Image (cartoon, rainbow over all chains, first blue to last red; front, side, top):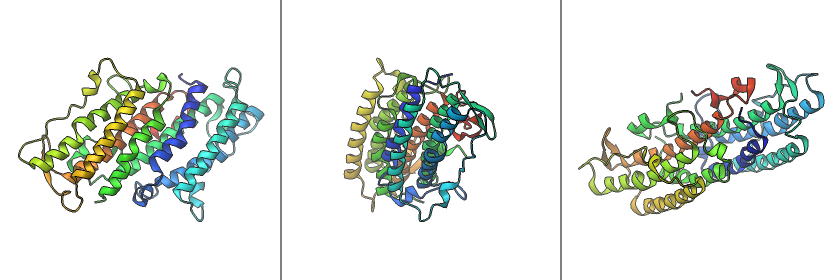
Length: 175
Length: 175
């Protein structure tokens, strides 16, 4: 096991700035690119990360601390962000994500003591008992998943443009 | 084909800041993590990107403009950065990459006219004739490849820590 709370926070607190550096001010061609039917564009991915801050990570953490395994977490709707109407700009979503993530991290620091709380458990609707440190590790890897998804999606846009170099470009082989 | 010079530059000019936001100040546990024997840690990936600025992208672009298909590009050593001794800190490498990338983009603006030069060709040692716009597209996708590699590598560090959530995390399924 590699999890340490301070190192997990290092990643969680950097993600808004990473996404901002990567995406802020980009042309629609990049922000609206996707990997095909049913896949998300970079702007939609930020919408999904916003949903996570509102309805997944801290709410589940609070349930673990308050209720333990007495009842399962409410399911998280992984498609809720697709119903937004009218859809906000990527810029607006980046700003909201940054604010929400900061609030989440403030709560995390108040709520969790790494000496006493990390082994506490809650009830996942599919998996059964899960530990608080597994939830926090998942939050970190979830950030990495979606940064990866964004860069993979934007790379896909140039799949044909790179010509013969496709053979050398790992990111285009992952389908 | 999706390539437009201005949009390609949008990505190339953002990469140093993206890497800085993602990596600057991280603990050694993250910067030195890798995906197993023979794979690169995030700090080594920056070293590879530095080599590209020095010996790959602009030098090949200049060869296309100056020499066309008269002789092949010198091969690019994809492992040169592993010979650095003593290895610099990630912080030093991030700063050097930022400087070199800015210089590369300044040269790109001076050298390439998107109305006249994009279809010019050079000779790749493995692929044969390649177009300038394919080289530039590859430069962009190469950035995405290595941002993806870094986030995938850091995610790998928590592969066991996430417990049952592994089933939901795309970035951990890519091996």
